[in-house]
Image 1 (cartoon, helix red, strand yellow):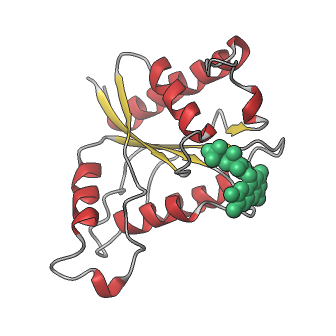
Image 2 (cartoon, protein in one colour):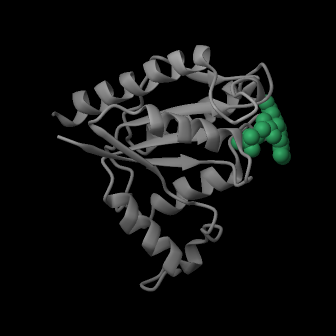
Length: 184
Ligand code: FNR
């Protein structure tokens, strides 16, 4: 069976390293994973007052879209030692209305990508904190902390061989994690 995976990228920057890593993993994914980036930058700040019978269309569209995926792979930059607002907002929007979260049970993985050698590890764990409450089984190993992200790619934007080896291992482990949780 093929599994559809939503990749959520917590940086909206055109040249985002998070986006580059997400695209690289999409390219390295095994045949049973169909992963694609789902945009989150269009989502209005979550506000319960707007979450009526007629919530903002972009929220409804996003919630419906995420329902069509089997798993979620989150890519987070570290902003001020935490998750970026845009990624947290997407998690919040998808989690409501109460009891109707679109995240429930979807096997997840979290990668933090930063230019700093600290590799956004605090942001990584901040995301994990929410995923516990959202009842998403999160892949534990390998942990995906990618530091010095600007050194991962050559001048043509192609990932270096040494990094590709690790990223192949990551996406292979995630495919196995999804299968283990959802059956093949
Ligand atoms: C940063 N950056 C950053 N890096 C880090 O390792 N720890 C941090 O706490 C922060 N804080 C922070 C705050 C804000 C507001 C910005 C804009 C940036 C640097 C950040 O990791 C760097 O810009 C990455 O390149 C962001 O990821 P993308 O955009 O390349 O995907």
